Image 1 (cartoon, one colour):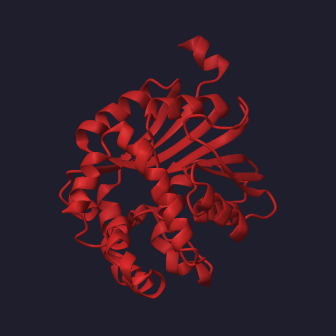
Image 2 (tube, rainbow, N blue to C red):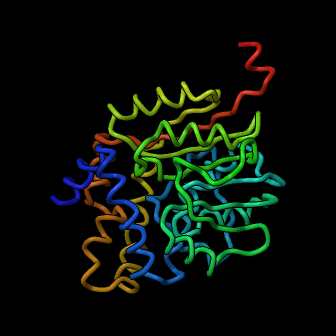
Length: 276
């Protein structure tokens, strides 16, 4: 019941601004274990997407990794300067850096404890994590080749400000990759802001069923980890927050009351602007 109420409240920008940062600061503090690297609901690939090869130590996070992988490989990552906005505990940025080999990989997150956790555990070489606001990205204009955003934008106070900042930091011709969930009515608003962003939408795909299947397939693994790694008093909240089977988020996506999409956009170059 409280999970449904929380999801309803997240429609309000003020509530989002107040509640999400303390939640992520709190979880990074009370669950400091390296075994929790990801906070997304996962993804089961379509048949034509194939199976990715993972190192043995990464298999436990396969479903969460797949959400990143099959979004990131929409474009060339190798040799690029990549920014993840909403990097959380750092697992996604670490995967992209270690497997897809960008020249630099920067993870940006609002929660200072999460950033510290990520830097302590995953930062090396060209991989770093910064604290900062998605609505005021602390990077220069035209500085990134690729910006990626995974299951994070629903927590922002202003999605239009975020998209404007992505446009600012991307180089002309740069790629924006985003995947997230919305109520159907809010999805239309999200699509409007993406279409009005100064970037061309190259791909748009409904992946709701892929995410639901991942939640259901990863249930046993997720429950084992919660039992082993989460304090007893926190287990009920973490089960709901992490989207186990029959949690509010699982039921809403299963019944398509909440939809999960992914997009690829490209920032216009001077030539494409002139053509338009």
